[in-house]
Length: 402
Image (spheres, one colour):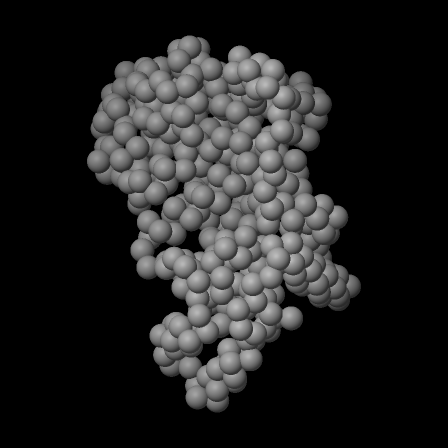
């Protein structure tokens, strides 16, 4: 079946449907490098990939491969069926069946690992089973759905309140908030208030009953949890213990089931998608998205970043949640009030092109006044079109913007 799957993936239209579903680890050893060659070609070039070109791409990608191994791989390429076009439903069914078989194999292997004492893999097993039970996670990636919303409901949506209102009054006066399916970017220079701003948004989302997910590969999850709770309870660490009994009670009742903060060094974007679906996340923060792994071969760093942000947008749409990507600003933003999205670190257009709204946080100095003033800059806004800068204050000790 692997040979047939590779044949399907040679066609660009099939590859685009399957790239978020079919992964390298689903193939045996000789097909892994062939799959790499297919990925490399479609990431870099447009159009279909012929078998003759597949030979050349593979040889260029693996110039030092041992002769005996190359002979096996080239035999496998030669055996790939020619031009498997087929009905679109056939293509979808074949790819989905391949995915199901491989998921079943992974579940079996992981279950054996747990039986042999590796309890650390139990979380992986839960995610796999959730994917299989919710088979839309496979077919949903491969299919499209016609929009059938009633006309009257569409016009009512124009007047609908945002799903996630901004909790800063001056900002909410210009942009009321964001919606499920949106991708936003929050960026700033180091030590300018990105984490505090996100923690403040997270605390307010929990206050309104939303389930918050937080992926941390920058700060520790423990530190971010402390920030969110400080903003939620609006208490200073020195008075924290004085109110600990009430804090523990409220945490149990209002926060515990609505806050999922994960240490996530080395995670890839598909794991984050699974985490979001499994925990039914309403609003997801990824700090920092730029450091997350993504499948593919990229000749430039900005190409990899664009693919990451495309995937983040898909997570927002597929899971009907709001996704906030946290990013650094380049040195161009140092001591600046207004931060334009061209100051995003690593990619001037690729990252920004996928976002619905981009929020920059400017800070101009370290004096006593400058240390509490932040400049909230909206340089991209597909929600209602407003662009500009607003000044606000930050209570550094409590992590609250006002």
